[in-house]
Length: 391
Image (cartoon, rainbow, N blue to C red; front, side):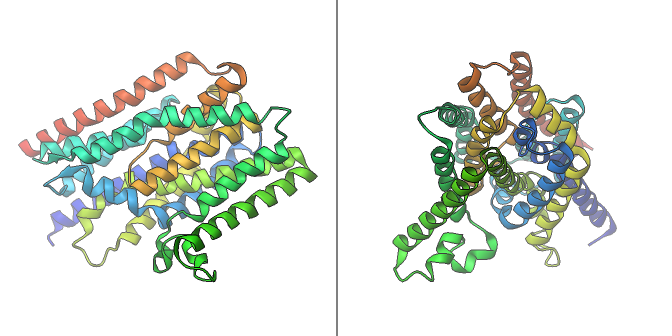
């Protein structure tokens, strides 16, 4: 390997680390705990510290799925060379940095996906229509599904005929059952999930054992939350809210790390000394540092400027956010956490106050920024790579 190639690979790795830092400072670091901060359940700085650690863990244990999709599935017939990887990551990180500076949440998934496709087309790649359909469906459905679930939960929690010692434990049971079925790389030898791992010690076979373990973990979560709320309702709601924020932060790391390190996977696959787990570790570290150093500004923006959130409305926001994020990880689809969280905030706000507290102007600018970021990233990716090839 000559010195020029080594320098290009090194610069690509640095660009990936910069992108990971921007993700940690922006979408991954800001959105998971923004509802909890808005509900005064945790301080901004403590939220940034915790979300960094949990994002790192999620990146390492669940980050391979989306990383593979971003690195290999968005454009067919070509593999991005080092110069193309550098262009992709600098465009994505640059647009994200603008969003952080201005306080408007630019969707990372839109910028990276747009730049990868634009660069890939510029070097002769072919469209991956089936993957685009999958990605587009999730992007379009996320605001409606997430907002609807948040609306439904926010409508039920304050009702006097549905006491919170019943409604909140039911939500905990749902979340616990989903957690039991999350796929982790370190559990691949026993089926990949906590449920399949637990089913190995249950004296029944197959799907029934897995379902029994899932229901058992869900029931345990419900009992713990019910006991906590019964002895201290306000404190129990706050602790459940923080647990949800932790799960969303973990899911953010699992999903968003692929946007930073995905383009590196095909680039380094022929270098036996660099394993995929090492690449994920580097991306997770970049997210952690970004969350600690740059996330507070975006946390404040989302938690205070979009809506005034109480603990119940925040719970209604985080439950669908966790479910959608893990669906994206399971499918290997890059997804925007800004889109997920903001949509859920709006849905819960419509249930509680008919949209009071949500700024239509801020919302409109954000939606335009989401759409514009994809189009701009695609154009910059295609044009930049065309110029690079020309020289």
